[in-house]
Length: 261
Image 1 (cartoon, rainbow, N blue to C red):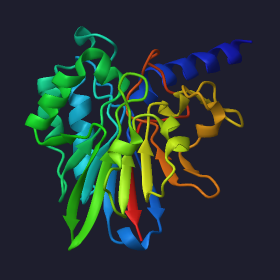
Image 2: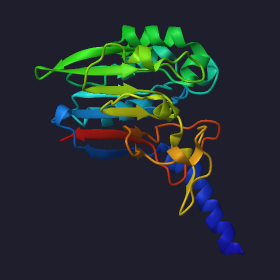
Image 3: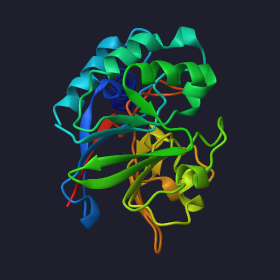
Image 4: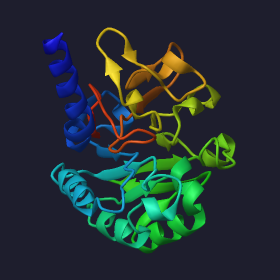
């Protein structure tokens, strides 16, 4: 009994104080002739608390180590539901603006961003050089080739429109959505969908997986890479912060690096 209690104590300490503060780089290689040679850093669900500026600076430093062509995000920069819970957005955006890539930083907003003050957060991010995509797309000239980055508004707090986000785009296109539930709603072919929101469940048990996935599709998106038959590829990041409970177990914070070959 004593050993069981001791092990339980160690697990609690790990889940509360150690794993949430780790930072890993998760790498994917995707074979796509249209995007060959492109390197993307993908990060989301930051959830930076009011006393976590150093944590954010560490994340930005890790991003800069990757020497990326593009930085893409699916939002949820802020913590909680109220301004008092989160790092001031002016500071948050200034630190994020230090994340460098050859062709810029593009994002959508998450449900927590919208709950606190979506329009204000979008303005501050854009004032710091981070482009926010709200049911729209932007074309980039990369090595004399056109790449479209599209973004939809959050599915629960915004008015998402896949049609508007993909209006007039040509291939290749990368689509940003805060929530993976957008996946079945995308009927046209895109090169890659990037999503988050679920945090990988935050707590993942061996053999079982996540105890809870905040998605209407449940276990369908209890994985980091999705490619269903006759459909698109999607990467779901486990994110960088925590929500509801400040714990992570077997589900460490990550930034994602995607290399296209």
